[in-house]
Structure formats: C-alpha cells, structure tokens
Image (cartoon, rainbow, N blue to C red; front, side, top):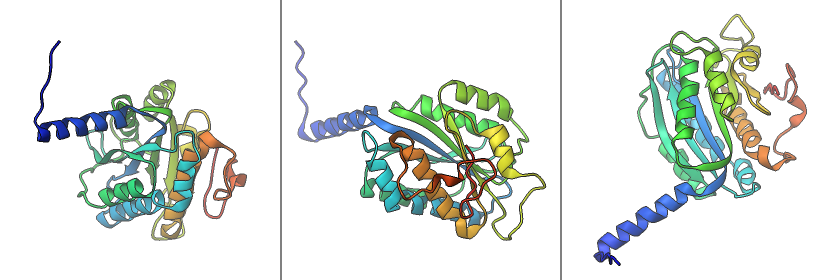
Length: 260
C-alpha cells in the first residue's frame, strides 16, 4: 500500500482541486452556451450594452427562480462573443449558477474582459464552437442548448449554417436564437425578415424558438424572457414570468416575437 503524505498547504490545495473537479463533474439541469454577436456591425458600446443585458438578466429574480425550480436547481453557462471563422472568444468560461451569489459572480466576470472577437459573420463556425465547448466541458447536463444572438442571418465565411446546424442538432443540442433588430431606430437592419430567417435557417432541435429584441429598450427584457424559457423548459408549465401566448410563428408578445 502506498501512503501519500501531504504538507498542510499542499493538502488544502489538493482538497480544493478535488472539490472543484467534483463540482464540475456533477449533474445539473442545463448546459447553456450564450453566443453573442461581435461582428463588424457591433461597435464597442454595443458590446458593453449586450453584456450588460445578459448580466442584468442572469441575476434577475425570475431567472433565478426558474433555475431553482428544476430538478437539480443549477445550470452551467458560458458566454462567447463570435465574429469571423477564426474569431470566437470565451468571455466567461463555464460557470455553475445555483443562486444569487454565483449569478452575481458571472455577471461581474462578464463586464471585465476587453473585446477580442471581430470580423464578418461566421454563424456556422460560431455554432460549431458552441458544440465543441459543450462536448469538452466535463459537465453532465440533462439538457444542452446553444443560444445564438445576431443582427443578421448572413454567413460570409467558414462552414455553412446548414452544415453546422445539422451537426449540432444531430448531436442532441438545441439551438435557440435572439434576433437583434435595429438598436438605434424603429426599423429593421436588413431587407429580409430576420425572425423568419432565424426560424428557417438557424434554430433547431426539440422546442427551439426565436426571441426578438426590437430596440435598445427591449433588449434586456428579451434576454430575460429567453433565459427563463430555456431554463424552465425542463420544469414546465412556465410560471407567470413568461407569457407563452407568443409561442407561434409571426405573433408578437410585447415586443418579443417567439417562434416555436
């Protein structure tokens, strides 16, 4: 028999590492990759605005209630900004959120790093990055979701959206979407129907949906409702925080178009 004798500081460090491994290996309700648009159409102020919207949403009492209402009462989240095919940046690595303290820690970590993703739209590459992060995180979630936000549905470089979506969905991962319309006006940023393109070309898997943020005033609320829908999927029926009347194509829900 081999006996391992550790000094007190070493033993403490060893115990901390073991507890960290145990935490990351434990089962939880949801693995969620938040893929945020950081392409050329998004300036520095909008990067901060998007991050603040997610930071506000993840700490919202209704979101925390949705997390607590599931089987394990905890989810794992990572926030990634994406641009061109070779530009995806993990802003906040996988974090287990199981209450206000961990949610606040995630929110604070989200606002600190500089922007590191740039370039023209590569949605296909972003989706595959999300899949790779789920495949290699060592976490066992009852559900796995990639949530992509974008202000267009173009794909200028890298794998096609169709190819990436098929790969992701066939692996058992659901793709949801946040269609971000013009943030500084009341019109749309493109000549096509962005929600329709999301629904047709990007989202996929059981229960996949699109939420639309019409303008700057609705962005944070759109993110909040989207997170509740994703988190509460495993503990239906939805609570009063989310009106599910809009879960039909082309219907409106107070500035949020929800397609399922």
